Length: 190
Image (cartoon, rainbow, N blue to C red; front, side):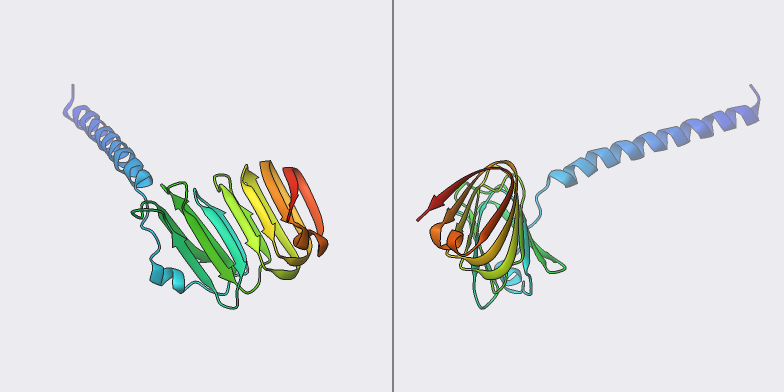
């Protein structure tokens, strides 16, 4: 075999070896990065979140949204504080993500105005209380327990994908029109 052909063959083999090592290293370290949990948002960082009118929540924790004059986000993990909450802003939307939380973990959000809530599958319970507004859109998937209590919203736009349980108290129901699309069990409570 000529010297030039051997040089070309060895160069191609070396390049192939480098590509295999590169892909292998990326898969090994790339998957490790995806499974490592992000740090929780600190209480000081939660206190800085403001000027949101919508909430997008995805996680294994319950959420209580209440009308308040000031903005607040409180994270209450039971016990030793296991679990994570990552909170951020996307435009006028408060984005809450949580993982590895115990079943009794709760997030309480206080805000002056509410226009929209999106609760993704995995959120076990969602409560909205004390709001007065012309219209509020609420979209939820999976099978959460959703409670609307003491609201003066004139029109609710509710979108359910899954088999969630929707509970509306008489005060919220008498003040509003409810437009429900999807599959949810609707119960009127006191």
